[in-house]
Structures are given as C-alpha cells and as structure tokens.
Length: 276
Image 1: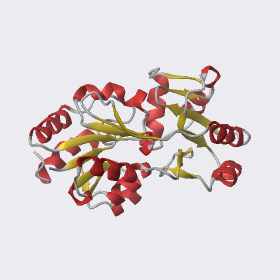
Image 2: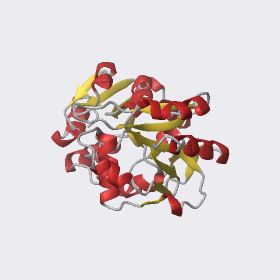
Image 3: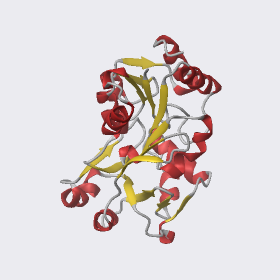
C-alpha cells in the first residue's frame, strides 16, 4: 500500500479553483481501488478545502500541517494545534504596524484585511498562492472581512507586502516560534507573499503522523506539490514530485518533475509511477 499526498492549488487544481481535471479524479479513483490511500496535503484550512472532499479522499493535512483528519467522514482528528490568542494578536499587531496585508485562517473560516482585494488587483503576475487568493476574493469563496472575525482559533496567517523590511518587526517578535514561509516570485511580480507557520508542525510532519496512523513506512509515500509551502513534504516523502508549473527551487529538490496541472500532470505521473 502506498500513501499519496496531494497539494491542491497548482497541483490538484488550477490555483484558486475547486474542480480537478477529470483525468486527476479518475486517477485518484483508480489508485484507491488498487488499495492505495490518497490524502490532501494543503495550506488551505478545512473550510477552504471542503468543496474538494466530494471527490473522496482518505483524509487531509490542512493548515500546512496544523490540522489533520482522516476517516470516511474526516472525523478522526490526528493533530490540532492552533495559535494561542497571544501569538495571533502579536502577529497581527506587528504585521499591521508595518502595512502588511493579512488573512487569518481558522478551522471553519478565513478573514482578510478589507483592502486586500484592491492590493492584489494592483499586482501583476505572481505564483499559485497569489492566484489562489485573487480567485478566492473575486469569487467570494468564504473569505470574510477582518472586522467580522469571531475569535475562532487561528492556525496560520497569510501575509502579503511589497518590501521584506515590512516583516522585520514580526520576525523579531515571532521568529523563535514561527517560520516565515515565503513563496517564489516570478517576474514581473513584486508582491512578497507567504505564510507564518508554527515551527511545531509542517506538511512533512503531517506525512509522518499519517504514516504512523496507518503503519506505513515513509519510504512508501509519494508527495505532489508546486510551491515552497510544500518543501517539507517534498523533503519527507519517499518519492517527491513537483509540477512543471511549480517553483524552480522545488523542482531542483524533487525526484520527479511531471507535466503541469493544466496538462494532466497528476494522471500522467500516477501512470509513470505505476499507481494506476
């Protein structure tokens, strides 16, 4: 039995969308029929990944590793570690002090700075994460204004700004406990974007937790990703695959580079790896 881990945006779907290519859906069905297990492994919170669960997976690693669930109804929680209220408040204070645009993600929802949409519309190009947020905001995919935040436990903070120096205060305040995971920029993009993620978890540690649950050696795992928040997954799994549309730095680290998400990359890689 193999355990297969799939990032969503830029890997399973075109960034910001919730419908995988038919070829990917069929490949997932076929490999599960052969006895393999397939898990989403994403930076999305459970609320934002929920539309994809209709395609039937064996569980998910969400919030970049902060919330992990398995089971037919995804009701067996293997890991659950949100920020403390103090960590959340300190992050937002130091980031907002420096003009950084933020989105906070809880298990059941996301809240973004009210002018984030205007900021993104003024930026050209980017990467799969920027495209995800552009589409999420323009399509009204459940991202509510920050002023409506209800106090739900927050797992991570998505950040966007124009200068690295805007992150200095937050890094000084939070750097001992959190990683600042920044995405690779592609010209002509200038928007620095990424996530603040607790050092206690990441996608790679999530893979290990699920391997332990199902008593499967890590060497029997395969991970698919495209962006730098997939780094620890790519470094952990037995066989790592980066999409052709992915970050150049990730391609250099992956065992395999497969065709892009828009070119039936997952299905072709599943076939090459004898998963279907």
